[in-house]
Image (cartoon, rainbow, N blue to C red; front, side):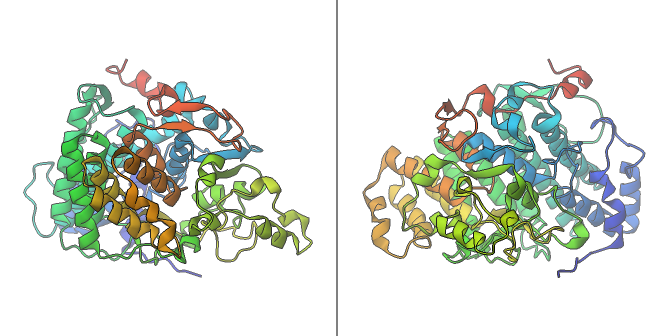
Length: 510
């Protein structure tokens, strides 16, 4: 059993900064929060207070209810990864018993802002991250403060986390990058006044500035916990920001940043064996950002593992089944190691051999990712208190992003080389992916997009790729809803609605 490492007792006391609920995000100093002046004044005496505040911000990424609801899909970043995978069409709801995702999978929630599920919870979660980051930044003197060696890491991480939250908001609530469109209010301090929606370009400029500063301030910082952000995480987020803008200039910038992270991080690609290794440990050498989940974290059914893993006492086991889209699965070559991430008939037969019908898999479960994401105990419904870790980012993303950006700017040779480096770890024979050499132009871009969907299935990356590539979603035969329907990336149903509560509370939003 793992034990939890706690940097400071103050981290426990201050975790309420991001996990407590208040009636409105814009309330400057709710009574259950530590105030701006408290954090600033105490931080002058004991800088560890600010570090503890930052730990609370990171903790919110895996804490239940941080989206302001009691919904069983509200458990931090990985909860929104599931939502975006559904929006991408690559994650199929194949059985619905408990109705946790039924309305979302039907794309009913995304066009009705009265739903608190997804629309409200995502807005609330990411703006709470922003609010907490702003508290730290203000306590250190504000956005233009003179940074000293003693506070540069804290400031760098706070600005990186603020940009992380704004990036996800842009992806979830904005159909595509349009400089003059107005969707998101931009809060960069803790004044607490409601603001009108800023132009998208202004939001992007702020993200870019935050991430550039974050990467610079975090240069040479050696983190002790993978849940923290460092310069490689900041530069990866910046690469995603540039890539989402989708212009030749920004695609080149995204490509250069991806290459920079690959060279600087020095992490190995996920190996062929690790591809079916469970994706459950921060000790995995290819992980760039993740969270060490322990019994002290107190996660159970309401968690990513509780929604995705049949070896956890979970919805995935009990009735809300989620699988890879049949159409996508059929495009995976039989010699590709990643095809083994999903259940086979032999696996099902083996599960039934014990004679315990309660633990049987059904034929309809053939495409659940039970051989990609799993608890090492391999007892169906066996894990009750979650100890398996959360992955946010791995180095493979940078290889694939570099390949995509290279292909889009005409650097076909570099694109193919990066793509083949991934595929070399997925096949036994180079002949299985030699077809890549003949690809060029849009055909190469399309192949990289396909391989991105296959490689990062269930990791919350396909939705970003869908938008970057302006692609269409065609739902396969194993979806419960909208089977066979082709949905373009800019369909209103694939973007969240600003929640009704925000419109009611913010007089500047119409």
